[in-house]
Length: 410
Image (tube, rainbow, N blue to C red):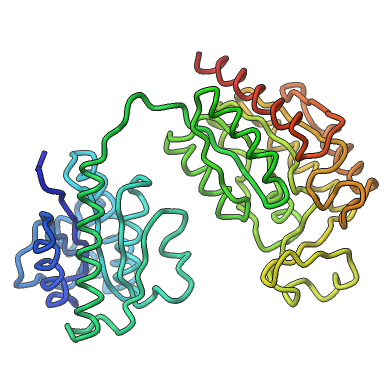
């Protein structure tokens, strides 16, 4: 393995040759070695590269000449993105990459970000893009890509682009050096995922502390749509091997039409992998919207709470609560590993307890009746005479997850 970090430069050199040549020199000058990959399907640059466009296309199972003859730019971009992703994965598995840097407009950013998203969390990834000041979700997804707005278009080297690209080169070289030199620090602890909302923070913090004392590492995810997806992506990749899914409010947004759902597969990944799960109902009475004007017009007379200027919460009706309960039961019933559901009967968030703005015993009962009525015998149910943030509940959930984890993994 090289003593210096290796940075992969990933880019469409059929249109950005001069810019990538500049970036190449800057990364070298910052102390890293460089592997230069041309993802541009339409031409070979005069500047030398380590992997040309044919190698990239072939890595993804495509024939470059056939792509060019087809004359469909969208198909070619997609094929090059898949090839770049496959090539990057191979380089990572061979221990030949410690950081990735790319730049581009919408097309180049689409290719490079697709390739970066397949790399593990923690490997440095940076994208300088004209798209960096808008909606970055299509590029970043749920990965840890650092996206930098280019300010000016990436069209030649000028006094603005020179500074931005030089900063990016120095940044990725330093991050790659840190990644290469990072020591493991002894045996790894089992990694668990936990979901949290502002109104369930005390519960999650108490449970997390108990589990950390028991020898686990607990990653906490904010249950705002992307949080649930991120946690489950780390389950699929093998990082997270147990779930403390205390805050299931994302299911409510999926069922009732809120703005922070985590997709139709939420709360199914751990079960499909056979991972131990402890699940509760944190925030499940809440439908989340952005500013008040994003709440449907016909809902304006419903019970609402403005959590902050950008987040408006709406209380579920009994009918919505029952639908959420049935959806949750269906997901838990499909679990192939041990799963325990904890039901706090005195409230599922700070807002839902007696005296809280969302306290509604009728809707709570509709939820619990629908949920428990549809659950199969494979799901253990524990009802406790507490609210969600009671320390007794937090410790009970942590202890049960610990017991289930030991049964599965020994």
